[in-house]
Image 1: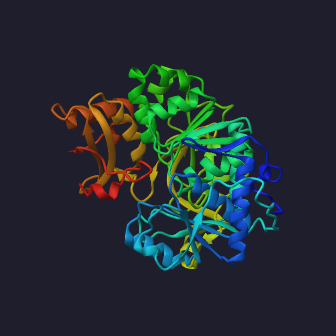
Image 2: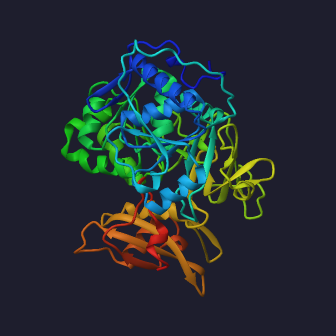
Image 3: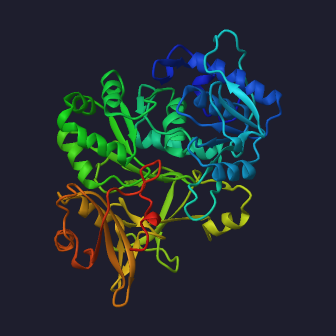
Length: 488
């Protein structure tokens, strides 16, 4: 067996449900059979690395788990990626095979790869147990970054990194085999795949995947046994908007054990609307492709809106200034610094990029996240934005865009908000607000928004320029693409 099995429940599988996608369910016995059969095929084929066409289906989950059982690194592919991005990932990762559902049509960029059609449903009595011995430090997944600052880079994640982050979340969220996780996240990234599929399987619990997110689906699954919900801010915003008109959704959320948001900051306004209607607080966590999970609000801790909680067990976290000197923990809530982390959850390297790998780490093995944050006196971390796009240096102050965005979203005339900086001859940079109005016919004015922010934060954080837009550009995870907003 694997010297550190990722999925202990597959060693002696039973009839408990493991994966449900729509009207299709695999028990642990079913999953063990399907993944053992596929793992044996990969071993027989001499596969050294496989690409997985990561649709939101049982086949994707089976493909990834089988690759992990076989010790063959898997490269999840986003089916929405363009031809150039897919071509880059395939050329960079050099998979020997692509795993896909039998009915999936694959793009030209994958035409040169051998294809294996994944069968999710097998007779559990037809497959022999699959065993192998694997090194916990060996590569498990190669997950490509979003490529916002250049071609996507493949972050090599070890088996130990995955197990350590999932076990740290077990502690933080009191996650057990009795939990039933509900989500509708894509399966080509850390949130949906590692946390949302591998997480329940490592615990011996189950997951119900919605296929496509809807508030009706969330209500249905939570009302019929779901205990946990994972989502991104866009999903929780839709939930908050729907609550006044969907009493069944209110009831279902009220009965959930844990509501978790990640991948981007959840606006405080949506936190408060959900809590007011349901009595349940959404908890946030913080992670990256390269680090997996770093911090979280704990299930037994204070669910403080606007924070991502405290460092997870095994994770060291510090804030540093521009000279990479550590900022003392008692420096106060206005001391903005870059987050650096280290621990067993970190990636091993960027595939084929020793230069980028070296540049990503400071001395002592600290990973430079590029995220800027402040820290409360009791250790709660508040992220204020990305170093490259969200740190605004204005009038001698370091200002995080995130807190201004939260303040703007509390204004009744604002539906969506983003904040950037632009050059200013007097201030160095000035704060610029990009607003999608709640009512396009009656948009808020700059003076109104400036006064609103100054009253909640501080006068130097008020916006000094305003751009009105129909909607803000976002990626698949709901993150605002600030580079697409221009320079103002």
